Amino acid sequence: MLSKIINKHSTNSPLNLTFIGLGNMGGPMAINLVKAGFNVTVFDLSDTAQQQLAQAGAHTTTSPVEAVKEADVVITMLPAGKHVKSVYLGDANATALTEAGILSHIASTTLVIDSSTIAPADAKLVANVAAAKGIDIIDAPVSGGTAGAEAGTLTFIVGGKENAFQRALPILKIMGKNIFHAGDNGAGQVAKICNNMLLGILMTGTAEAINLGVKNGLDAAVLSEVMLQSSGCNWTLEVYNPYPGIQEKVPASRGYSGGFMTQHMHKDLHLALQTAEDSGAKVPMGTQATTLYDDHNEQYNDKDFSSIMGYFDDSVLKDV
Ligand code: NAD
Image 1 (cartoon, rainbow, N blue to C red):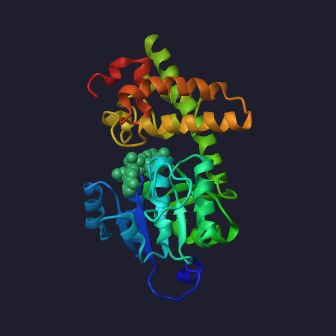
Image 2 (image 1 turned 90 degrees about the vertical axis):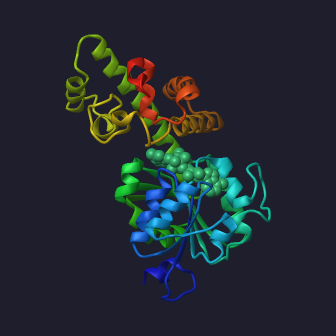
Image 3 (image 1 turned 180 degrees about the vertical axis):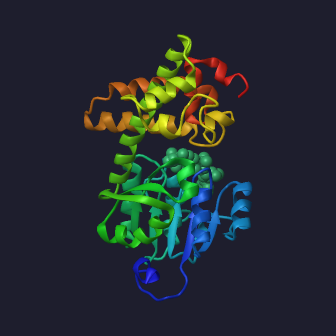
């Protein structure tokens, strides 16, 4: 039944899933698909990432084109728009399909899911090229962080046609808990960008408030608990406290390693500013958060985005 929903023309044969981009998010997402019993083929530029998936039971390949040859479903989880265009169209700056792009080698029956966070314009470009070849494609960026990726509890925010959304649902449900259909292709990215602009504002605001308390003699843990139970409560206080040692399993308590890298938050805030400029929306708070992350990204681009705590209190970054 699952196979029939996902696979346009078929059959009860096992589904071949290809997963490209096995980083902090894509790695655990792909592992959950292996655990669910799919025949998973993977590709990543990093050998280490490929090896982790091989150990989990996936088939590794040496190029994106090789990876998609037998695919019923292709899923990508790449850093930014240039990587997505490089994989799908064959060139980071492409405006049309080239032979090196995987869309030149995918059957029209294949379902394509891109979960990277990229500009809505890039998502629409790739979707138009896919549509011209009769391929169903959705943008399906996620929220929920690496913990959500590991637990299979991500939120997916989908842009695309209804039939493609319906085909993708059974697979998204394996990796996620909340799945929203935001609109046509690109709409998932718009919603994701709005969410991440708010997250950037919340993270910088939370770090600012904790630092204000600490500088005035409060214990960061006590203040965090007060705000958690008060009107300042937000997601960062609940599950992603930026101050070291307050929550056990967050990046702040392991030298800001892993998690959601500053370079990705930096990218998402600039996507928000560009989207705002294109639409004439006012984003003063988003602009302020972007200014802080512009500065922070120069030195801490590969640290988790909660390391913005160090902008306010540089002692938290002394051993990082
Ligand atoms: P990451 O940098 O950890 O992983 C990206 C992976 O893509 C790397 O393993 C890299 O080697 C691989 N890659 C890059 N170019 C490639 C190519 N041409 N072919 C194959 N592999 C390639 O990033 P991440 O944290 O997993 O994030 C991925 C996407 O998800 C980003 O768009 C990010 O904004 C978004 N996102 C991340 C989080 C998070 O908490 N980390 C949460 C929500 C959304």
